[in-house]
Length: 173
Ligand code: MG
Image 1 (cartoon, helix red, strand yellow):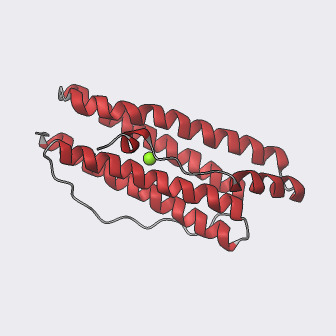
Image 2: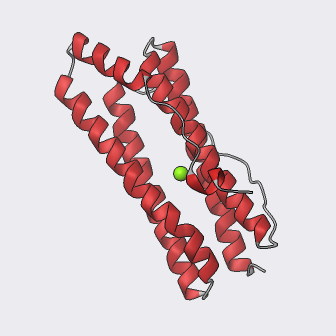
């Protein structure tokens, strides 16, 4: 059974993952409207991944005999001045998520809830990947600047991103 502190913290994290999903959906819709379908595709996959993160945590709370509470999702921005700005906002957001995961991990240790600590370990590595992906894209879009051909080519590159089910869901029974 989950203790209340841990259950509340996991529920807060579930809400944060849905907020991330909502943010990336807004970005996908914005860039779709702007005619940047590759960038929109990248954010649509990000949207799916964030829903999967929430699902992993919801499955875990259920597995431990806890209760998932779905809180309202705060509003997200609707527009970004440029692709580069959106990726900078994404990195900034992911760094905040990393801090949330780290705090949750520390709480699990403090409460001697080693099963939760173990589940969170996957998220710790996932955040390293998230931040690294953003940095790479920021570097690429910084490099091309306002060059139309460069943006066109990067947009095409992002169109090829495909969704892969995160391993904790792929192996779930
Ligand atoms: Mg996430």
